[in-house]
Length: 310
Image (tube, rainbow, N blue to C red; front, side, top):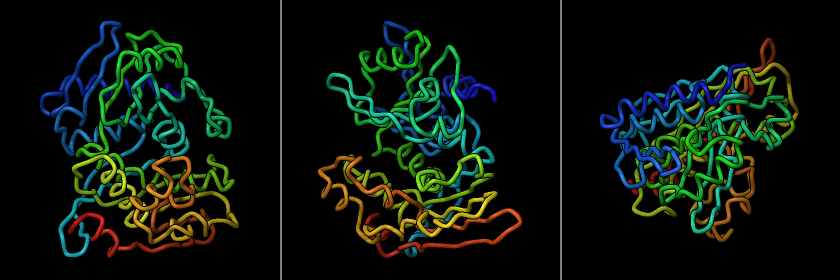
C-alpha cells in the first residue's frame, strides 16, 4: 500500500494552491511547519470542510454534500464513502491523538498517526507508514503553537519543516462538515472495537446532517455528536457474519436519547469518560457478502430539531 501521508500531501498542495478560494489561511512557523487554518481565525466554508474531510482520509474516501431535511427545515447532509475502510478510516480519519503541549490542547486525526502506528488499530490491520512528511488534522479552539508542531515532528520522526497541521474548531463550518463525515468512521470503529476484523470490512457509505455552527465550542461539540448519534446513517459491506452486529448502532447504548451536551457535562467534558457505545451512527445496515443483510437502529429527528435550534 502506498504511503497515506504521501497521498495526503498532494491534497495539501491543492489546498495551498486554492487557499484564497477556499477561505483557508496558510502560515508558517520559523522552524518551517505549515499551518492551514480551515476554521479557527477564518470562516472557512463547506468546500473547505469537504476537502479537509478528504485530507483526513488521505484521499481514500469520496466526500460530498446533498440536500435533506431535519424536521421540515432544509439541511445539507454530508456523505462519505470508501472501499478502503481500514486504511482510510482507522489508519487515517480516526481522531486518535490527544495533542496536549504546554497551554495548547487539541485532538489529532489524519495520516500522521500512521507514522507512529502505536494505536491498536494499526496492529489489527498490519499497517505502518514511512514517509518524510507528516499531515495532521488538529481540532482545537486555537491555532496550533510552535511547541505543538515540534511535538508532532518529534513523535512522527520528521523534520518540523515537513509537518503540515490542518487546524479547525468544532464551532466552524469546516468543523460541522468534517464531523458529519465521520458517520462511516463510527460504524467501522465500533465494529473493530467489538472484535470484528477490520480487514473483513469491504466498503462503507454513510451520511449525517450538517449541524448549524454554534456560538461556542461546547455547544458545537454537542450538536455535531448529536448529528451522528441521532441522525447518522451507515451502510457497511462485510465478508463474515458476526454475533454482535446489533451493538453497532447508537440505539444499543444506554445513553441513547440523551443530548450530547448532557452526556459530556455528566462526564465533566472528559471525552474518554463517555461510554464508547454512544459514539455510533443512529442507523446501520450491514450487508454480508453472499449472506444476510442486517439493519439496526433508528434516527431521532425530534432530538435533532431541539439540538439544532430549529
